[in-house]
Image 1 (tube, one colour):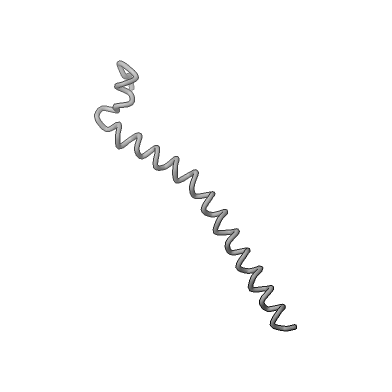
Image 2 (cartoon, helix red, strand yellow):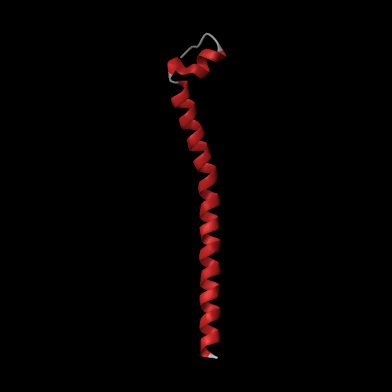
Length: 60
């Protein structure tokens, strides 16, 4: 497609807010998801370590 100006490109024929908003939300989710997954992993490992420590203290 050909646009007559950069403003027309970013306006996307009146759908610019939807198009660029969708790209923005997608980019945000692609950044946040690995961070959240890493945080959940660390929380699970911390919980498992606490459980293992509690079990060893109970047997002693």
